[in-house]
Length: 448
Image 1 (tube, rainbow, N blue to C red):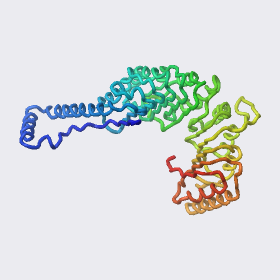
Image 2: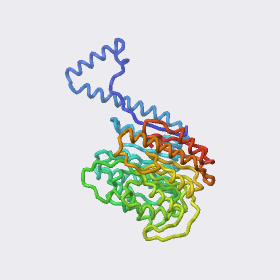
Image 3: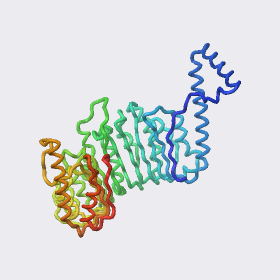
Image 4: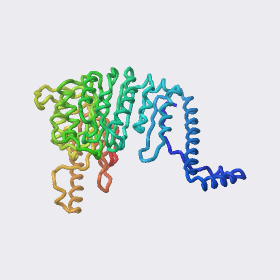
């Protein structure tokens, strides 16, 4: 067994039907009713005792099973936030490293546990751990209490300094008072760190200040090969949020550009939603790393054809961005690109083919196909449906006239049609005909 996943369960407090079978069971039932008659708290105490007894048995069974697993490399403990839970189960499952030999072989650890259980890891030593994925759900816990938990948890993380290669931190709108400034402030240096992934609500409310995050990135500027700064839905705030906090990605990459250079960065993934007001900081940062990127993923907001061209200009030619002024071109090293478009049009495909000739994998997310701009709000449903089918027909006709001889693309993924008909076969036929090297064509589900 190389992978172990545990999702703690709810221990039932309902007696088994077997408990009251036979003469002994019936006598026990009578005594229980008598106790309940004279002591109103007896049923509660009895149910709690039953849960404790069952929990001890189940924990012991897990310990005995896990105790013989010697070569586990991946371990995950996942909390179902929507259900009640027993803290004792999480404590037991986070203590398995002390009784099981797999603590010496574990290389990947995924944690989604109640915040107060993180303190259990302070004394744990995992000498081979390379990848740590942490999902924080603090609910309504106070910021002070959360920070106290971070004080203990940071001891565990910092003890991973000889081996840690990947750190991923994920928080959602369910964390009302979370402040990640304290967490990153407590982290030390990790000489082998290659990947940093951070996902927080897009309004940046989980950082009171970006100084600790920026400092952490600066400390690892020479080792980071992968950087992902991503977003999810915003959290409800008990206190007002800094209006500038929503620009947290913009401010972070501007700081990197100002004070350091990620010399080994080759994989970059950014959420564009906090950057939509002004793309210049993103383009300036992209200019600094464009000649070394192998993979670029841009999520959330969709780009216009003009904005796509600006991105490709930076990827393939040192152009004027902000205060930088370059004119020399270089061969683009990019092999994978994932991007969200406002709409797909043949001219955008032409740009990809001409600017990114050595691209191997392309993922395009979009909700429309167009050759011309038109205001669908001014059209009736029937008129819009006709216009849309006509646009598709013209799109396929345009693509049929193209043949990208020099494009090395082997894998293409595109969105499924958001309307009530299937375009997968027609899309596949159109692209496989004009891209001779295309091997894999995939239709993405609507949620992608």
